Amino acid sequence: MPLEPRAPTGPARLTRPGLGYAALTLLAISLLTLPWLLRMFGFDFYLSLASRIIVYAIAATSLNLVLGYGGLVSFGHTAFFGLGAYVTGIMISEGVQSGSAHLAATIGITAFVALVIGAISLRTRGVYFIMITLAFAQMLFYLANSVKGYGGDEGLTIRVRSLFVFGDQVLDLKNPRVFYYASLAVLAASLLALGRFVPSRFGRAVLALRDDDIRAEAIGFPTYRYKLVVFVVAGALGGVAGALNVNLQGYVSPNLLYWTQSGTLMVMVILGGVATIWGGLAGAAGLLLLQEVLGAWTEHPDFWTGWVLLAVVLFARRGLVGLFVSHKAQTIR
Image (cartoon, rainbow, N blue to C red; front, side):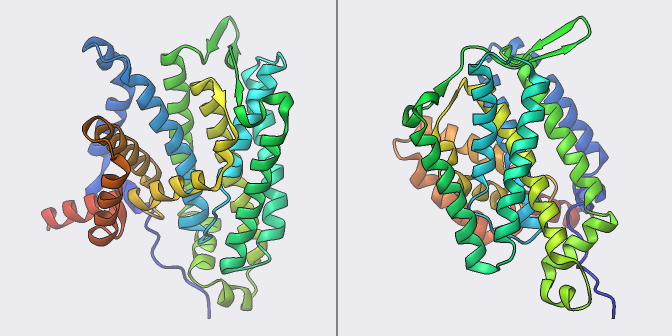
């Protein structure tokens, strides 16, 4: 009997009325014109927040690939986010400014590390998988703390940023608008790739493994290999997000490798919507904007953030994206 996965939730988000082409067009126009609008109204300082949301949306999307579509609960995903930041930061500190070199090295190194971690951790299940991924992240955290040549526990500050050369054009990520559009392009490519992945043959196989990997393995699915591919791709994408983050902040510290950062990314995924294409973006925007607003309104923003997240878990089980789609679908009916 063939193994059939549940109806995938991801690609449907691109075509159902709740988030149809009109909404996507409006979202695209809003994101593309945001720097111009902020400048026109004198709110240039919010561009940094918008860029930070995009960077974390990429990181959350990479975790959603593992957690939502692969069914793998990883508390070590921040290892790739922090490692990507350190790879780029160290290269810049050593005088290498080529953005292409940074990107290639970041993807190559984080993918290799993800391959090693995945090759070991994916031979286990459940809490053992969680603990092994967490252990690797903590190992990298302590390693970053101990390497004094690159800042140690004080972190590493960079004075210049990645440069991308296209003929006579030089794109410097130190320019806030250049950085915004570069990170937006990475996010758009990630979401497009995820949208193509989910309904593909490989994507449907991964969904089947998520739903019942024991049964899938029993009928001959190469479960280990499929999960490893997903884990490596997600790790590389998380590394790219880290490389962007160090360019945005001009600084990287071991805290990016600490396990609580994985918790933050997981909160973003749950808040936005697990196994939804737009969950990473919605969750990153929701959490960071909420923290920004509450930080200006109260001295205890984390306390109120917790209550909001609790409400989402209780009343919007499929996250912000699921809540929006469900509401629109009911309106149409």
